[in-house]
Image 1 (cartoon, rainbow, N blue to C red):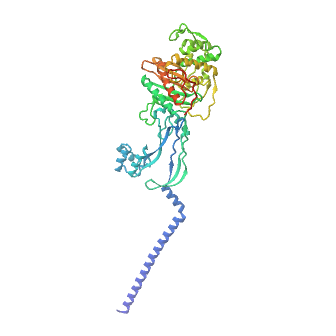
Image 2 (tube, rainbow, N blue to C red):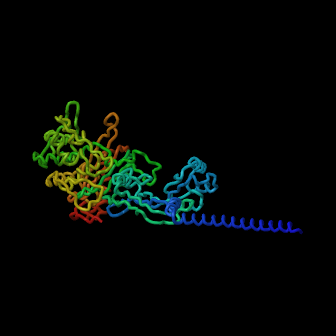
Length: 580
């Protein structure tokens, strides 16, 4: 090889070697630049942008979860639960995560008692949403089985469901809530704010399927609703409901009402109506059965007002118990109106006016006293005004006021026509007679202290009227109201019901209002039965026997010492007993 050839090869070798070195340096440089860039990015991510990225990560994984607060418990006066909130599960879906064609939806629809086609269609229709309810407030066992299917986008959350242990027996008093546990009727509505809890909040970490994998911290604890203790005695409520339901069925009546008050406090011990409803199953609800008729429905009290007419006469000082009123010839005419008694009772005293339920006698007293005096006395008893119970839908009734009273208006007012009351108002008025003349506001909430009452009738007059009411049960129209081993007093009433065209000829309300034991009354009870169809419709035939059974059982439950033996002879003075 020539020297020129050797030189050429040497040059090529040096060039090749230089290219290799350059390429190596280039690759190394690029590698170092990449590593430097990665290093810088790591520093940037870990140091410079750490807070920002942490927040972004938290946004994607950390969520604020609501903590449901259970509603307060409603109990009777002895702590028996009437309304409680039990934990249940709600199944919901994130349609954006759920495949509508997932085969597991067949089993899910069956567990949740849903139509499978409708379930799949809902998931398609709301595919752009992140939340829809599938089934609210199911039993925890059902929820566990549903979630065990592990279908993407199907989740559960704890909620509470309201449950009413006594069902229809306390429905009209307690009421019910909607699915979100907001009060809709009764005490649940009246005390909704008191019973409602305040939800809490907590931070949690969720996985990419929306499931909670870790609780981080509590932001605000849930505050449960406050409990509420009613004045109702559930034992008395049950027996009152049983007897009222039985009499309505036996007489094929349209409905009925019973109210029982504690004489010395005005507390409602029992309040029941027919028809009723089961708040735990509202699939068969009838709107008319939702009313607490003892408070929301008005009626003319009829002859149950005669004791108050006599009390007004005694209070006036113009009459004494033995004052004679001549009811001859057994009727009175006021123009085209005629007032009648069942027969001509002739001259009778005030007690006999009540015992025989004389319209003529009561009307003569009213005409003598004057309409304004009688109305004023009724008003003092609480008629025509709120009872103070604070129950939703309470009506105050009608107590007429006149610039000038016509004689016929005075007469009808004396025996309970031309005015209207509810059953609770009537019971409150009889409570005044029973406790010696004190009017207490009535209450469905148990009173911790003796309420402040107001004297509206002298104790002497109240005692005189009670003795007359004893005669009604002992030998008058209320003979079937005798409660077994206890003495009682009260008054029957039978009034025509009002229809679209006025008074109905063949529709009546049978009423009995009374108290026991009559010497030391502890309970006042009013029974009213609407439109009995059995052929019997008088208060003494239909309502009085209910009073007898309820009062006899109630006094035994309250440990009141019996006064009478099985033959009706008096054996001892009634004690106050223990309320236990």
